[in-house]
Image 1 (cartoon, rainbow, N blue to C red):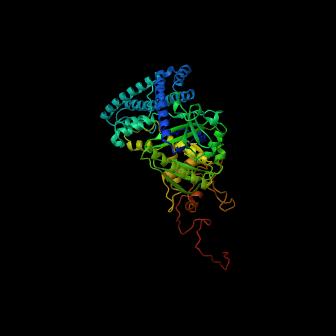
Image 2 (image 1 turned 60 degrees about the vertical axis):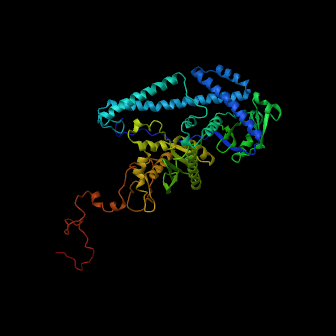
Image 3 (image 1 turned 120 degrees about the vertical axis):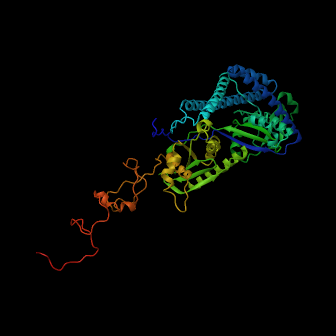
Length: 546
């Protein structure tokens, strides 16, 4: 690939809608017996889930349906067949997630090794290009990078060996909470508080739904009136307060969000999964209901473009959005929606949801039918080997919430009846600043590079080139051709070319006629046609005939 050759641009597409729904409500007014039973069930099933996860990790790649059935049969005697099915399924999902995370860990290490090997093969102080990095700046840096290469190769060999042997590293309760035990002072926790939180996170109180069964779930059953009952495991059946070994909680739930949709499902005996968990900090019990949605077909791309859209440029601390009509023309002024990603995970998630909500509300007021975003993915581009000493830039791209943003934006936009059009992020900031930042700047409108990138993203989603298109010259100097538009048809030749301003075209008549002399001429004309007017006209009364 040559230095000036651009990479191919992928076509835009409409993102798929959400495939699942989850709602939550608090279990209020629980009695002392209710709290006791929930703790006993969660602790008992949590121990079973821990043993099952250990057995699954020991199987490794030798796992099969027979080993799965044997594990489920062993758990059934200590719980029930449905509890055993939920535990084994959760274990399998957790093991599969660890395998995907393992692969995601290997890929950036491989990219770093390739970069180091390439740069170490170059001469010292060799300059790089836009496509390939050069050599290191000194012999000392070259030596340090050789040690770095040996370290990465050792990590890569160990990770590949573990993946080939089916070895995964899983922590029930979360590795972050486990590491918090070594720094309780910074976490502002005592050992007893950490222990309670650790034990609570390792409980298991979740049951998958079953279509055709009563209210969609036989293990944790919730009636349309909000009554919650639990099928107790066999060793805890003596705590039941109703028939068939079930325990009915004193609390009733009422989902404020999507309550009608949930009621329709349980009334029709469609599958609904439930999870009961305790918030140790607040001392509150919650119940979460979730179900899957059928994979629906997305609307055609042309339908999403029909009413125009809003181009959204994702940055480390804000969204830069600009409205465009269906012809690709910017409408109004740019908008900024800020968020802060410097706090805890819950705070960052709330900031993202608030910013997305503001964007969607503005989109509804504008009357557009879609939002255009970039398909950003910095998985392999934020390593030390990729950007060298650009530590601030690595921190910048690490703060951009690409993965969480996609899921949040797609699910929240679907509820507002808006579509998401994903575009290729190549050259949007560069071309947007080149072709749109200066022309749209005005004394009362401040245009930044991010605002211009939002226009570039929107135009690419609409199928228009990012560069501004100018109208071709008129066939004469009058207004016979009508009003001149900014947009030119796609089959017009020279539509991508720039035209000089009107003030320049008024003084270039001599250049168009082919003459090379300046604009100021001598007072005496050489020809009658080229004679300059004196500014007054006088008629001679006598006809000169001599």
